[in-house]
Image (tube, rainbow, N blue to C red):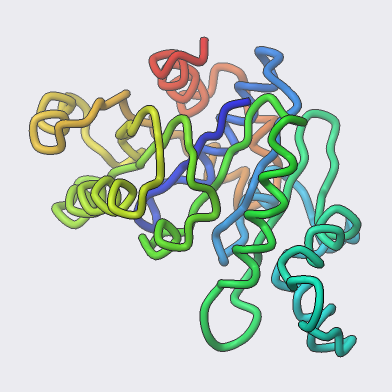
Length: 254
């Protein structure tokens, strides 16, 4: 089992990258996969053509509201995070042919994400042996690194756009990951579809991190997302998909 994290500033294409990465792993037979949508915007299911609501699947945050606020469940006795694990398996796990999906969902009450994160973290620790890869689609900010849904990661892919803020974001993300003791093997930089060609040496020079290339612009990706069509169905010769295949090959997933 390998655990992969996709992160970056908003609008860099993290979710599309995860969806196309999923398509790649399915095509080369690296399944089953577990996908974790840790972004409150909750776009990963849409990018995969899935309606969690239609499938009767609830987010981790919705399950917490249902258990401890609507139903009046007590937080005394068994730790709430442990109690939530069975709820996640029962009502919060979308099960597909090649991948399963869990969404953490939007913030459930005013305050932090502590309980949803702890519930998901405990569940992940018991799930890892069941999947070939676990892929986490992270939110745009950096606070999720401090929340440490997981403390051990194989590969982090940080998507970058052509701005100083994006470069600074990568440097801060790398620093925070080390400061909070998230253990990772590789920290890769990937150019989003707006990132110019030919800047790999500048990226590696400024960031001192391995640059794997950029995701090619493909208007069909936007069309698929707007229409709600699954990116798993995008053409094999799609420029965006071809570039993601090349990126994953360079990362050793050939």
